[in-house]
Length: 342
Image (cartoon, rainbow, N blue to C red):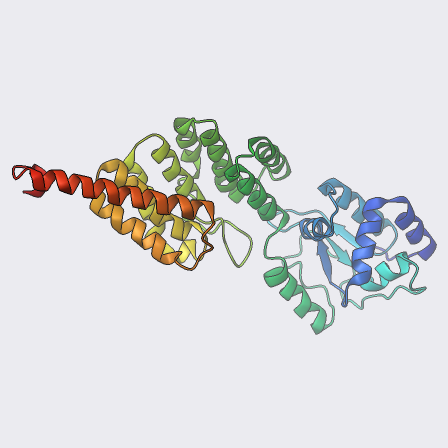
C-alpha cells in the first residue's frame, strides 16, 4: 500500500466535523505512548468508559477515513483476528495534532509498511519495546474484557436484575454483531436467552435453549485472563431445574460447578453453587446435605457485606431450614416408631 503524507488541516477538519473522531482523537491525545495497532472492539470499550455510546460501524468508518489520510491501514478482522487499525504514524502525535497541540505527525519506522490481511501475527508491526509492553498491559490487565465480553456481562447483569427488555436488546445486538463467534453463539447467547426465559417463568424453554451449549460449557469462553463467564450455562441450567422443581437434576448441575473449580476460578457462581445446591437438596427432602451446603456458602461469605440481598435471603432460608428440622426432630422423638429415626 503506497504511503500518503497526512494533512494536518484535513485531520483537524475531521476532528471538528465528526463526534466519533473528536472522541477518538481526544482519547489518543491523552495517551502517554503510541500503539502499533488499535482494535475496534477495544477502543469501543475505552470510549464507553469516557461516556460515549458509538456503534461499531462508526469506529470502522473513522478508521477507513484515517487510512485515506495516510495515518495507517484498517485491517478487516477474519480467521479469528479482530478488526483493527495498524498505525504507520504515532497515535499520540496524531491525536495531539488533531486537537491543535502539535504541528508535526510522527511516523513509525517499519520494515513491513502496511499490514497484509493474511499476516499470521497482527502484533508484528515494528514499534519500540516500551510501546509493546504497554499494549500487553492494556490487553491483559487494563482491558481484560473485549467489547463482546463486556456487553455480555452487562446483558447478564441486567437479566439478573430483572431488566428483561434491556437484556434482550443487548442480546439481539450481540447476535447481529458476532454471527460467527463460537463462544457467543454457543455459550453467551444461550445463557442469556435461557435466563430471559426464566424471567418469563418458562424453565422448560430455558432448558431447551441451553442444550446447544452443552458440548462447549466446560471450555474457557472469555477472551481475557479472568474467564469470568465460565460455567454460566451450567449455573443457569441448574436454576432452570430448580424453577421446574427438579431437585436431583439441579443438584447435578451445581455439583458440576463445584467439581470444576479450576474452570470456574473466582467467579461468584463458585460460591453461589453451594447455596443453590442447598436449595436443590431441600427440594429432594435431604435436610442433612442441605444443611451442609448452606453452611459451606455462609462460611465462604462470612465476611461479605451483610446487606447483600442474596446473602440475606440465604440466611433466612437457612434459619427456616433449621426451624423445620427441629420441628421434624420433635415429631420424631415423640414417635418412637418414626421411620426417619430408625
